[in-house]
Length: 250
Image 1 (cartoon, one colour):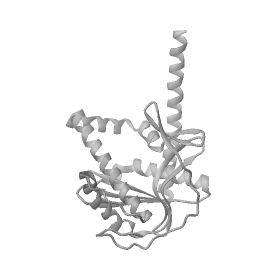
Image 2 (image 1 turned 120 degrees about the vertical axis):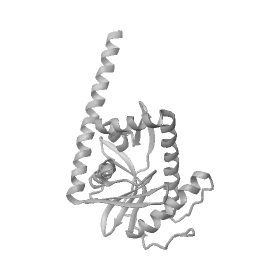
Image 3 (image 1 turned 135 degrees about the horizontal axis):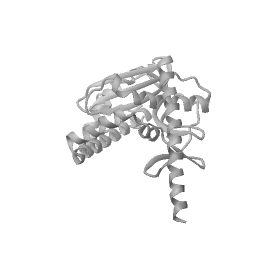
Image 4 (image 1 turned 60 degrees about the vertical axis):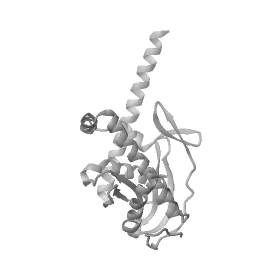
C-alpha cells in the first residue's frame, strides 16, 4: 500500500469476499436516488433528510437565520467540498494508490484525512470494500465508505468532516444512516453486521471516533425503518395530491 508522508503503515488487508453492485445516481424531484439495475431507489440520506424531526428543522432554520441564507449556504458548500476532498484522499489511501490535491480545499482536507488514517484506521484489520454501494431491494440504497472488520467486529465505517467537534447526541442521524447500511448488507449478503463506526475530523484537526453496536445499533436500525415507512407514506400522499390536481384540470 502506497504511503504518503505522515502516514503510518497500518495493518489492514483486503478480503474481497462480496461482489458489490455498480450503480449510478440520479435526481427525482431534486432528491438523490440510486439506479440499481432497472430500479431507482431513494438514497438513505434522502430518506433521513425528508423525515427530520420538527426540532431539527427548527434548529437548522435558526442557524440559517443567524448567519443569513447566503452565508449559511456558503458554509455548507465549502464543507461539502472539503468533505469530498477528504473522502477522495482516504479512498485513495485504502485502495493503495495515493492521492495529492494541490487546491486550497485539498490542502485543507489532507491533514484531516491523515488524522483519520493515523488515529482512526489503526483498528481496521480487514477491508471487504471501499466506497461500497449497498441496497435493500425495493426500499432504499446508499454508499458507505468502508465495510470490513474494525476492532474485531464486522462493521460499517463512515468518514465525516465537521466544522467543529460534535457531541454524540448531535449525530444520531449518522447512527441511523449506518444502521440502514448494515441492514442492507445483512439482507443481501447474509452477514451479521452489528457495529457502526464514525471517524470524524474537524477542519482544525480534532479527531473523534464514535461507535455504536449491538442493542443500541438495533435501536437505530428500527428508527430508520420507521422513517422509511414515513417517507413512502409522504411520497404516496404527495403523489395523490398531484393526481387530484391533474384530475381537476381535465
